[in-house]
Structure formats: C-alpha cells, structure tokens
Length: 117
Length: 115
Image (cartoon, rainbow over all chains, first blue to last red; front, side, top):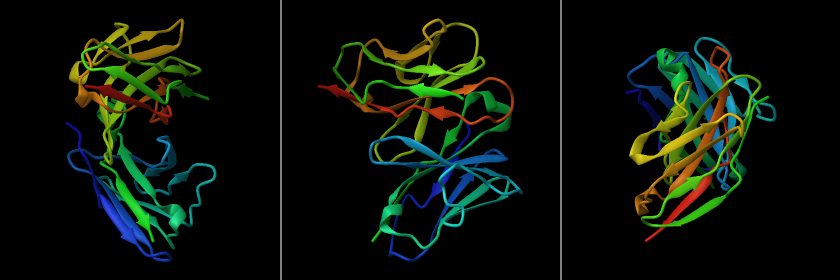
C-alpha cells in the first residue's frame, strides 16, 4: 500500500528560527502533495498544494513567505516554517495522492508537532 | 464549492453498542466520499470510501458507511463499538469531475467509547 513518511514527528525550536518538515512518498511517485495545519479544536486547514517542479499553490490567508514549500522531486516535499513564532505552534500534516489510485483519496503522513518557545 | 458538515463535535457510546458518526456533504457534481480516523498525535488513516456502486460501503476495522444521495449524507456506522475505536473521525468529500481536485474535510468528530 501507499506509505507517506513525515519527519520529524516532534520538534521544539526557539522563536525566530526556521524549521523544515519533510514529507516523503516511500513506494510511489507523488506529483501532488498537500500540507495541512491542524488546530487545537480538531479541524484540518489546507495550507497549500505542492506540485513537483512548480510553485506551490497557497490557500487564502496563508503567508507564502513564512511557510516555504518545495517539491523538488516526485517523492519529496518540504515545508519550512521561517522565523517561527509561538503562534506557529501546531500539528502539521502532509498528504499525497497516488496517481493510479487518485480516486482513493489521500495518503497521510504521521504529522509533525511543532512547538515554538 | 464543496463542503462537509459533521454536526457533532463528540459522540459518546458504550462499549458493545452500535455507533453512528454523522456526515452530510455538498458538491456540485457527483461526490467521492471518504472517512478517515486519527489517533492522538498521528496522521489520518483511511477507513473507507464511496466512489460509485453499492450505497453501503464496508471498510477497515468493521466500520461501514451508507451513501444517501437524497439526504446528501454519508454516516459512519459500526454494529458494536470497541474502546479502541475511540479516536477522531473525519468525513471528506471531493467532486468526481476529474483531476486532483482538493478534498474538503469536515471539522471532525471525537468518538469516545466508554467501557
């Protein structure tokens, strides 16, 4: 089955520093990956759609200069939270579509708990 | 525009009793519908989907869901709840009209199975 690996699972960083989160599709090529942020009251917010070899498409209200997304290969997308602040603390989840199983929905990574102190 | 509503923030059920987690949706075309489960500090796991065909869909861990087009609903059900079913459940929808269209998620329902 399709597997998406997300790393790190937890990270604590100081305010003002940058943090990179990796999302890898392990056994399939993912031309499209998605980045979500999950807030304490449960809801998933789509931040951006990451397309291999092109610029990410950001959702309204998401700062593209703060949340840098790079999808340089068919198996790797990265989210970099730049100049992190405590309000960026959250649970970030990536997902990917397996092209030949597009109708089957997404495969999700295990998430990254970011804490900015 | 497409949307999903999960009207209950939390559902409590006694172990061994049947459970239902409600979901209604809105899409312009034909829907593809999904249920996912999330355990604490984990990503979402796929439970089941409706694409076409039989309205009653069976998925992982004994869960099933019934697609009801007239009521635009896709409620998640299980005949006998287990304590281990306690988790956060998300309903999701996307329009079936081609391409990698965005999947829209509901706000989630926390299921608490009481021993």
